[in-house]
Image 1: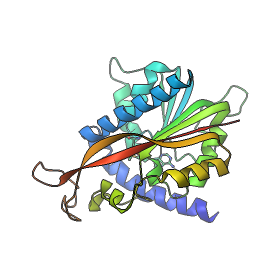
Image 2 (image 1 turned 60 degrees about the vertical axis):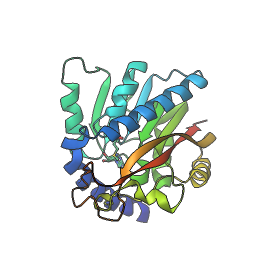
Image 3 (image 1 turned 90 degrees about the vertical axis):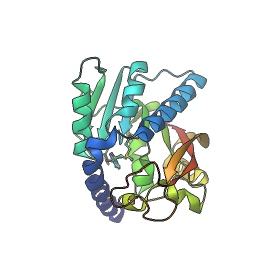
Length: 252
Ligand SMILES: C[S@@+](CC[C@H](N)C(=O)[O-])C[C@H]1O[C@@H](n2cnc3c(N)ncnc32)[C@H](O)[C@@H]1O
């Protein structure tokens, strides 16, 4: 119960922030570049394993940048996000000509595999998925054990999770976020060893958490340099390289 309460609190902090940021989210080149890195890593992993998942769940889809990149390769992506503002932007994008027709946007803080906002399986139960993705979300989640347990419950037998986020490679990883964007940040990246242990403990099999690619990001030279809006003007900040991990696990 304690963890559910703290999860809700951290989700509220994050929600306030992400609802505010939703309308300008897609104007940031970094988020597109990061999702492209994630989609390449995810598709390569699937190809290496000769997997062709049909039903995909993306948790924390934001405005759906990664969902758009994955959708052409699968039957359907159910794209969920706790911030209603993010889902509204995704719905606007999906209404445009040429947008994929196989993305279902859902505004929900997913904490229960039987949440009624997930699509029905046909027999009154909720749909289960062949693949769950989640990109740049885990570092916003207070209780990783609970969210991983929810993910395991959302998978069909034999289903996989492929989760991507920046790596906690030490104290410098904190510089990923400017001081003004720390609301809702629960950890400064994913520690590979801790995450692997947790995924095994929750019940995933064939677990691996490995650095897969890295990306340059403009960061503050000193705390607060980017100001309240976190705006990156060309003359401010410096470039730092961040490694990204791919967290893989299977449901028995
Ligand atoms: C940093 S944004 C990343 C959005 C998107 N994946 C991207 O890379 O553009 C994190 C998103 O995760 C969502 N989020 C955080 N915790 C969540 C949860 N438990 N369930 C659903 N969405 C969540 C937030 O609302 C936010 O939109």
